[in-house]
Length: 89
Image (tube, rainbow, N blue to C red; front, side, top):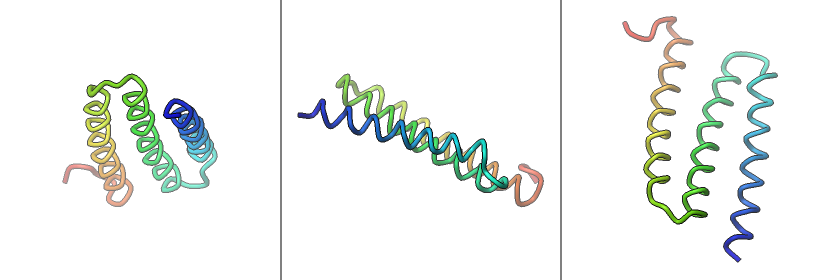
């Protein structure tokens, strides 16, 4: 039963990732593209956690945590660059 739920969840997360990729390429302006990229980080974290559940391994959860931290820092840096034009003042 758990394997069926994992397959369904995997399909839904991959669909969400494809929709985010569409928004990233077609997005009308830069803030939409930044938001799509940030959402892609969240979807990639979900995929890694699902892989960790499927393989029953704890290392995937640690890598998901590292990707989450990198995604947050990069989102803050891109937003600061959009607002002020410079990352480091």
